[in-house]
Image 1 (cartoon, rainbow, N blue to C red):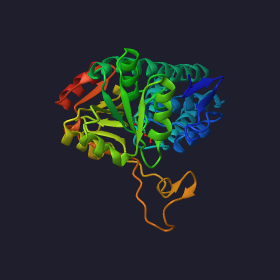
Image 2 (cartoon, rainbow, N blue to C red; image 1 turned 90 degrees about the vertical axis):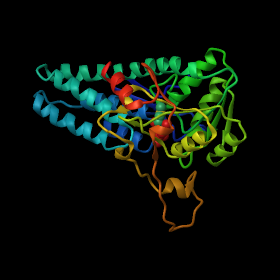
Image 3 (cartoon, rainbow, N blue to C red; image 1 turned 60 degrees about the vertical axis):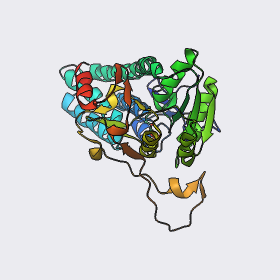
Image 4 (spheres, helix red, strand yellow; image 1 turned 60 degrees about the horizontal axis):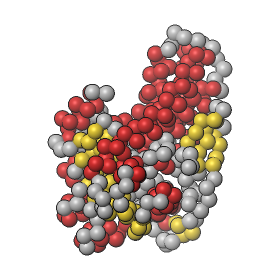
Length: 347
Ligand code: MRU
């Protein structure tokens, strides 16, 4: 089994997702700046994985702080947190994990700096371990929605590669259903422009021995019209208080197609992906990425030089198109706002 992210002897080790599926290589980040860069260039990606990796990056970063005075320590610590925060704007798990680490520093401000550094490292590892358990719990709840013989469509990669490892969110649901003996086929959108579906999801599912059918993004509607898709399950980068969900670009169109064809449309995401500070989807910051991701394939230009390019990495699916949100504490069905608030408050 591959390891998405690990903390080994004060360093962060990642499977380089930009090289998959052609090469299975690992990179070691020696500094927090290396970690930030790996997140930015998407050597590690996927909302929960970004959060876990950033937490480890902070642990690595504070390891290099030598001052003994708390205020001086906090100044350097804040700089590390800010640097990691600036990598990707949409996935709230990044900010959630950084806030969690900050609260450890604040809680222990009267303790020696060496103690705080250890406590931060411990918390980062706790976030990592918890994420694996959360994904399994999500899978256990979510698999109840899957029937034997279902054809499930997914978009982007919401598997082990997008989380701390092992299960994943949307793919966690599929994997647990498969473990329970349900025969499922997964239709995987290639997910232009970064091809997380073709490169990562197809690779993960093949490794798990789960039947997979790769399609290009524009084939999804045709297949739905032909009755080939029973369910759609995707992950999320940020869910607003009313259930509106930001996920990989293309998710919104899928949700409308699903509605038109009467196909259930599920989001699988940990509670840490729900940002109750944001009331509705239009307020979620959407990352605009390098135009080269659109104009080039594998480093080779495919569009004319000088063409204007738009490359939003995410879109927002209005909650009215979502049938249910699968979390580690249970499945939330509409009306979302009240139920989300209750579940978030219960944790
Ligand atoms: O740009 P990416 O690859 O980080 O985007 C990832 C997604 O959109 C995933 O669907 C989302 O983070 C959920 S991952 C469990």
